[in-house]
Length: 211
Image 1 (tube, rainbow, N blue to C red):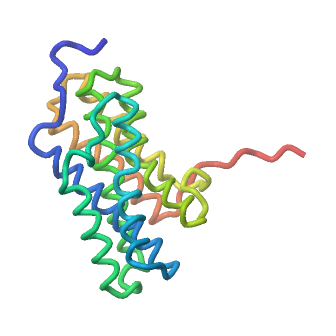
Image 2 (image 1 turned 45 degrees about the vertical axis):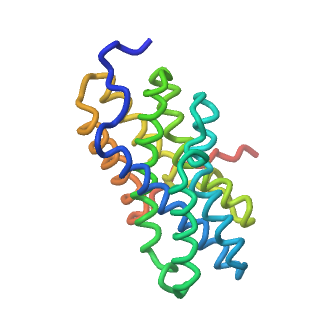
Image 3 (image 1 turned 135 degrees about the horizontal axis):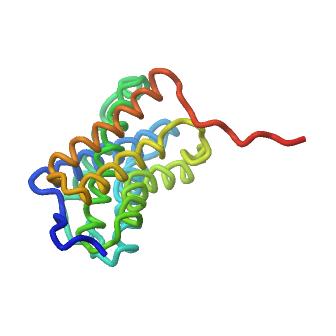
């Protein structure tokens, strides 16, 4: 059981963490469709599925109302992100810029997912896993739909960065650290790990082949 004094959710900055992750992931979904030269309808679909996929699975697992069904602004934001990709040249997003935005969204969304799970009474360890689900499932769905290798099948430190963010937030919150400070510290930890992985090409060791 969680301590009675455990803060139920990140105050104040929670919506910004949510929107940061949602917007970046929606944009990455639309970009995947754009690179495949699809129609705007497909871009919009990819943006929505990628943006809300992780949060939808999280809400279903923790017994919360599915967030985007009850908030008209969420779907609208995904459509705006799809429109941004549609009207701008793909070369604008083909470099490292989107990867850095994605790193920010990954860390923020992982923290928000863990915080929402705690709010709904989920114990600490499953709450940390809910942060990873929130941050990563949308990208997994995007990759499957686009026919690209899933982020789960890559050695790069991506899921690990999400786990660091969500796990750090839960640990700090349970330890009594004010939730806003815990959220910022946890998001910075996950972003730093992801940034280091991109800069220095860090990755987890692969399973050793046994002949």
